[in-house]
Length: 241
Image (cartoon, rainbow, N blue to C red; front, side):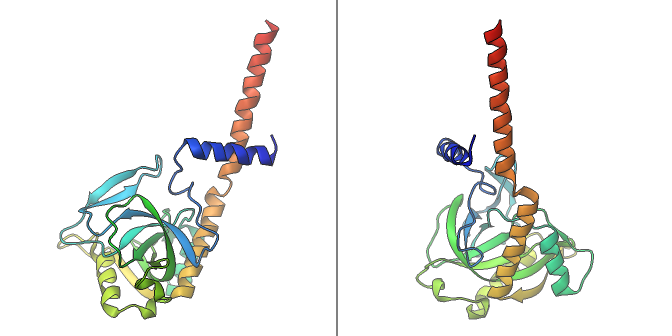
């Protein structure tokens, strides 16, 4: 089966079956400047939704802790992965050793002046900065973005353009969203970085994804070919009887 036939087959499969939000949604041709973003949680949610990595459906991860309310659309960038390249960049920037990737797609929060009433959607977002966050010794960067072409926030190109009150609100959420009363802080934000560094984090997460999952279609194509060949062999046996 040639490449053209495989391309047609995957298009047909895409018409019949829902794509996995992590692996089946394209990050976009303009990445890392503008990226597709899968939104899991919105500010009005009272529980934290998270994509189940196996099925691709949203599951309830946990109720939101106490008064914590996510101050923006929150989700992840498809076809990204936080592993060695992201961890190495974090160690390079913090001067610390022993940091690991968190084995998740890259998190992103998206600012918009519009009210979005539910998650489980895809939006285009322009990365303008991020938080270098450590969660239990793991690199857990939070990319800060604005909804592409947003009437109000869309004019902001770098995190330095944001009002300090918005940054403080985002920072407070990520520092406390896992915090329990009386427990030692689990999360730490070492730096707030701008657009160029955010784009580099995205690039590195794409590299990590390519190394871990970049041959998914090749594997699926080979498996399909094996299944087709097996079917032909069975047919041959039946015909010979």
